[in-house]
Length: 368
Image (cartoon, rainbow, N blue to C red; front, side):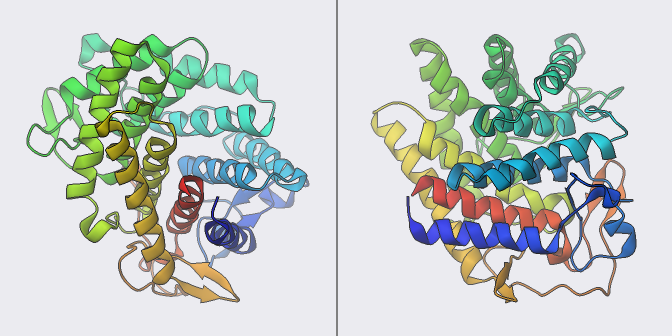
């Protein structure tokens, strides 16, 4: 592994630790990520709660533990998990299946890779995701409870989790097949956002591509040879589409702050999974792994080159191909509206944007 990327990932981790990690309500043995920096009192008191941002923070902590195993970080991971449940009203679940899928993914990795004991939580989240499957209603699993919008951001991460956890490989395959049948653009081969009552939501977000790449890569690595070939072919097609349409000049496209701040980082995470995990020795397999690796590294180099530094620690921008703006305590903050978090006036203020930069540095380390 490349020491340059190890160092950059470590400094990105240190920036989050310095600026965002705080005790929950001053309780001992707790830790969550404050959702802004500079932050206001409301955010420091964790009155603001973005469930899936905290799940992404947990996933990044697991990345760091894989890069540089430390007892202190394992304790941090335990604090993060404990505090997530505390702040979520003593529950692991909520009304959004995409949120629960993200937490399930991060928790499964924390259990398997960092030795964190939360198997009952995984069982509970697993049950939620399995029971949400409603092909009779046109899905897929829906975005949230009592909803008929079936989208890639719920089905992708849920499918990855089910491929990895327990004995749910067949369901993960059904989810991948549903996405491939329902949400793939026949012209660009990119993934559409979702479908409701037969009507496509035609937006094409980077993280939709990322989670489908992750799901198809897991299935290519875990299924019998005939099925694996089918899933690998989808990976080849989608990596090429992302490279062509979503990585202008080799750098993954940004999506601003708020929830969008996480999109490109998630895409980088699963491109890195393609680069390190996609099996096979065919020319198409090799090309997909190499292209995925190249996009991750060129995005990481650009994001690092365009970063700002405060007290020797990086501040990343929401767009990795242009200058980063330093956030201040002035201006509007991120707002939760209609089930999504909209950006702060200066996107760099949002924890999501900084987590994405950290995630990208860990991805770059993992592919070198």
